[in-house]
Length: 458
Image 1 (tube, one colour):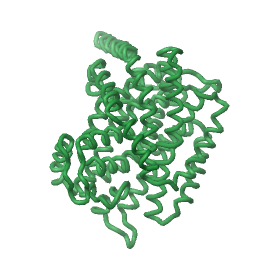
Image 2: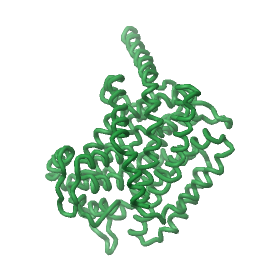
Image 3: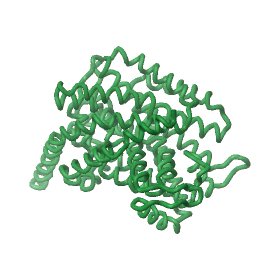
Image 4: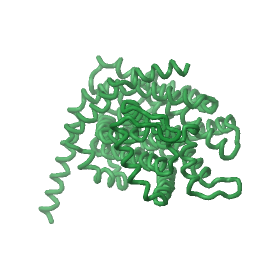
């Protein structure tokens, strides 16, 4: 089974998809005139102080927190560790490349998510690639929209929404505190049911409470490790860049990697982490109270920046502590080793292990909540609002069994279903790139004239 999954994964994540994925980001970067660089300060300001004008189910901050809830997960810890262990340090460089162009992609997804959103039969907002494919490209392209929605449900039920997150939580808690993984899976299922049956407003409220706390706490721990290992940072950065363009020889327990393995692993894990190109984030973005599509696009784009910053801190932490080349260790255990290398123990309890357990649990749990909503909207598009409750029950069932699956199989399944989402979304982004440019021009022109009028009045 593992051999079959690996073959399928290599076919999906081959050169065609990598070229399409990065190529879409390059195209949008050119057409939007480096918006991810020139407008990043404005995007970060909007995250801290959104306008919250216009109609929507949740605030702009609630939307970005829901988006980040789905984005910030095991990909930032386990995914980065797996990428470096498989593809070598060069994989982190290709994550950066994918993220740079992915910011333009994420911006476009945010713009289209707002522009083509609709109201469902319950009066709630629905949006995302299935709607901008259908309403933007036309009804002749409905099969592509259906393909995205089916793939989105599969990712929610079999990939990022359940198995990878539950397995990461259960394994780290079991290793640290000795609590059986089965009990952890059942507990997660109950907690998820309590929140997700309250709908998007409740998910957004929980995300707004957890996201700032967990992101800042995890980054502080990583920064502490880097400060203690300050002299090792520059050699680590040099190794990352060199490994991106040369075959990496075996070091310690690391078995070596080719440039192609580093590139494929880095881009695939980068997409798994920041979701740029999947189109999933536009589902949350569509529900935001936003007057301008481009404004919410900028807010959405900042999520990729934050995600990449956390990935970089994770990667550097693994590099400077030497944990990355321990072949006998995999997944979150690599970061556990890195944290424990600088933090003391209290008796038999390692402080680093406890902090990683808390970080990973929060990261993974918020991802479960975010992807529950994404899958729900895909289900609603396919089967109508009557299917929402059965979907939620199925989602909770998948959470309860996620703790019993093999780690390697889980990541392969996640990569495969992610790839299935990418194709229809990127086709839509190519086709509707002109709409994105037009919306951006209207937004920037409006605020340019507004500033001129304020200067004249002054």
